[in-house]
Image 1 (cartoon, rainbow, N blue to C red):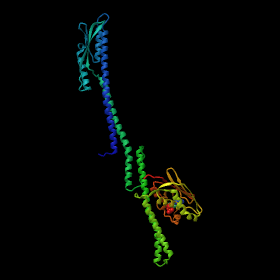
Image 2 (cartoon, helix red, strand yellow; image 1 turned 135 degrees about the vertical axis):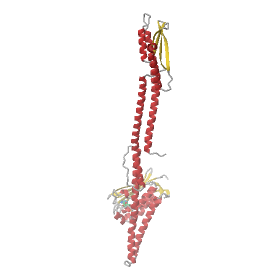
Image 3 (cartoon, rainbow, N blue to C red; image 1 turned 120 degrees about the vertical axis):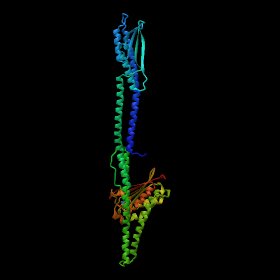
Image 4 (tube, rainbow, N blue to C red; image 1 turned 90 degrees about the vertical axis):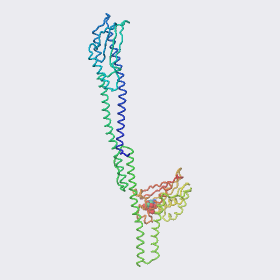
Length: 465
Ligand code: ADP
């Protein structure tokens, strides 16, 4: 059966409290009552001995019994529930509590048996008598008989003590139960409140409301982790959602420009305003090519980011690859009077050579596009123990700090007018990153506006799987 966390927590606290109380009261009653019983028995024995000694002392040096002393001892013993009778050597009664006051003696025994019945309804006790001869100088001078309720009995004070003990246990028990209930409610509230918030937030998120955040603070580590996980889940869903919206807008926008150009050009030709000259038709053709390139790029991103993207991996020297691509770029760099420094060492990579070629081409063409005439570009291939590294560094226009986190997104252009002039669609780095990701590698960027940009691609020699 499903129960709320709150109820479960409170019930467990109460259960622990009840079990502890039951255990404590059983143990207290068993051990304490047992100890107390032993104490009472020992006490009875001591008193018996005391009475024997006192009666003994009542035999004077004149070889006579001092009846007054005997009577005093006997009456004193009655106060402790003991019925004493003393006989001389011939068995003649010197003093007998029953003879002194039988009524009190009977009442005493009845009271004791009542006390013990109160303590334990199944109590099996009875009146017992212990007699012992008294010797003076090895001559028997008398007999003392002590009657009491055996094997032991509790006086009113003893019973009051045991009663108080049980009352204390009961009081502590009730207090512990209330305390457990109180702590249980507080703890359950502390745990269940933020969980309720997490549930609410998760529900809102599942309905597409990604703005809601959980701000409740908790001193429970797991709850804090749970809330921050849900918050970052909402963050990334929010980001995904706005990216999705932005992407749709961007695609529409990117297609709109060339399509409008095409439309106006063709309309002008159809209306006879423009001659369908070679030049005009080739300008239309260029726009069509532009759209085609963009759709092609988008297809590539979709393909590289899909789960079924399979890399055609093989071992090859990454350094050789970069060197060859640089040769192809040579004339373009020369045209822009850009000086290229290449430092490379043989570095065997394991990956899809065609796709990695695209990575190098994209980074070099960006460096070419965004570096002014007469600038410098530095290309490095490093072979580390675990990684193959490619560094492409330029002293071009750079990227502002606020643009850097976005440059790998589709259609993102830091400098819109300039990159449109250069023909960029803002997909090159998206493709680059998706290829590096597919290789389980890393791409890092370090850039300063108007100072230059450095891209670093890190590939493992042998990435797992
Ligand atoms: P594009 O086709 O516009 O170059 P990319 O995806 O390759 O698209 O790059 C995204 C944006 O990042 C570019 O529009 C540009 O603003 C910026 N960028 C990329 N590389 C560099 C670079 N080397 N120097 C300065 N800015 C760069």
